[in-house]
Amino acid sequence: MPAARPPVVLLTGASSGLGLVIARQLLARGRYRLVLTARDSSLPRFAAAGVAESADVRLRALDVTHAAERRAVVAEADAEWGGVDVLINNAGVSYRAVVEHVNDAERLAQMDINFLGPMELARLVLPTMRAKRAGRILNISSVGGMMAMPTMAVYSASKFALEGATEALWYEVRPWNIHVSLIQPGFIHSESFRNVHFTELSRRAAEDASLAYAAHYRHMGSFIERMMRRVPATPERVARKVLKTMERRRPPLRVAATIDARLFGILRRILPRRLYHGLLYWNLPHVREWGPHDAAMPPPEPVEALPPPREGIDPAATAEAASKGEGGS
Image (cartoon, rainbow, N blue to C red; front, side):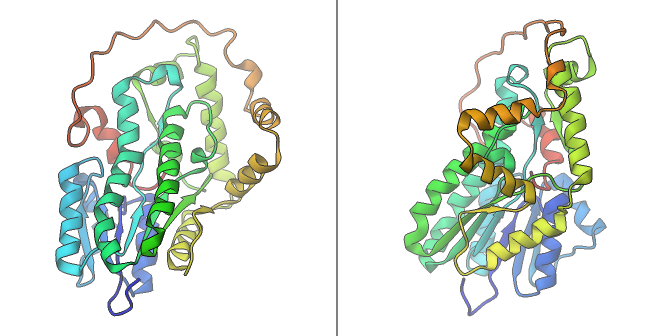
């Protein structure tokens, strides 16, 4: 990164959760110029957290799914500070739903926030990074990007996509001395499990024990809650891992940010795939109670064809989901 001036860091989803912890640690460093972003409705959270603008700090509205806002934030950094030196794609959201309970609009909403928006931001900052022959892009992924969990299908799909595109980008931009990394947290000791979002059908099944997949939601929900309250990993520890990776001379492509992320990575490498999936399946919480006694949910209504590609996603479909999504994965 350029030594003649403080590097410029653009952080998304910075007003809450993991993003806010990363922002505070960046502020404590005192050697960066920061563009801290959140959705417009979430900007008041900065004041509540004691984060204010200064000569080296900009607080900007950014819905990562909105093309005009993405362009505006990057253009301002280019014009005023000579471009973004470090992009940290942290904003994200998680839907809890089995495959059968997700329609096209919900599927695209998940992908737009966790995959399409971050990759578009990367695309926008790359020209100035290439011109300077230096830069860092850190994408906050998840254990869900290396392994899928039941009831988290579209979330895992978005993180798998992010991992694949980031890996390709790692090869593509190395000639310009641009370093690309994936940070892979697993369970983090926090209350963020409360921010998970349900689709229309998944909520019905989670609330009605007679419907198909009800046991999936009940047991996976309680399992995730227990894990997130018991694990030693904290947002502060994960944030330190992010900053350590950002400041390394030669950061790796993938960084396991928690103990369980390292464990699952080892299991994937050493176990035959059939044994690996079988082991995980039979260790799912109360898996023997899943399915056999559930009533069938009525088939969903036909969904009309999606409109042509547009800037951003349908606000009516995802406003609530995105509003709670700034805070990591």
